[in-house]
Length: 163
Image: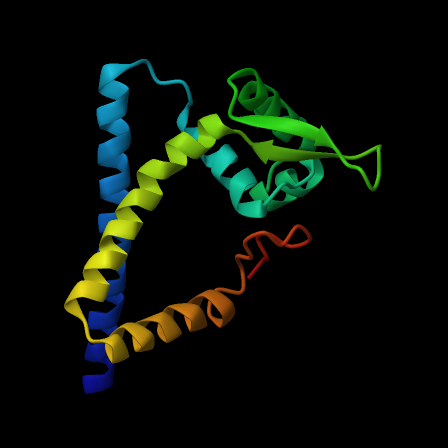
């Protein structure tokens, strides 16, 4: 029974870290929205984040990863292009195919998230021993490489695998 309690505590702790990262991002986004009109809807934000995570997918790869129709994906991509968050680039290898790339405008938005992650990482490095930091890095790498198989970042063939 003690093991179950430990796992619940681990789940709670992991969830708290995840929620804190999300809340800090949302806080920064909402502060920015207070000073200017929102340029992306929530669904558009999710869409451009999926495109970024996939690393220059085709329209079909984006649609498959997002679990939406190609027609719906086309509509979302056209809006994101119009708003300046992504661009299409024709493939050099296959001129019939285009890849979606995020623009500098999206990268400015993305900095809101990465700056906080960098702050937390620096705090971990400053407050933990080098051995604990190395162990933490190994645990995170195991989670990234092995324990989240349904999500593959930058893998254009199977971005979101069914469970």
